[in-house]
Length: 180
Image 1 (cartoon, rainbow, N blue to C red):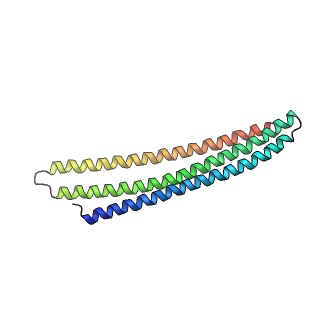
Image 2 (cartoon, rainbow, N blue to C red; image 1 turned 45 degrees about the vertical axis):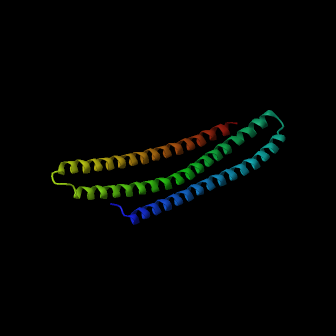
Image 3 (cartoon, helix red, strand yellow; image 1 turned 120 degrees about the horizontal axis):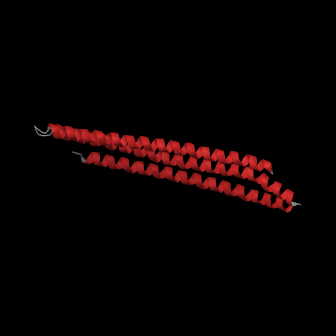
């Protein structure tokens, strides 16, 4: 049976975890805001430079060459922005995942302890029911571990695919920019 002290300690730990995660969420938002401000400032400055360059264009060939020269840097900057945004969101969600895994492991351990304590005091002749209960708990724990591993693998695959798409997009714009 849980004591008042154990319940209070558990609640205190939960509040500390929540405060820590809230802090991490705000850090992530701050990083995204900073990234967006930096990107916006750079885009504004570049827009001014491009406008000046467009005003100096003398013919259609020069216009096409100017537009082509802007394509590659734009693609690279977009890829860099996307990559940094992805890193920020992955870092923040990684903190949440770690906290969730820790909470889940602690809950599993507490539940296993409760089941163990309850089965020690089971009446005589209930060995079969106790064995079924312990087997069910072990099966549920194994299933949860499998789901967590599958989610981790899916996340790794998604990250690899994202990086491949960003790199491919950047590589595809290089020949297009050189043709003009």
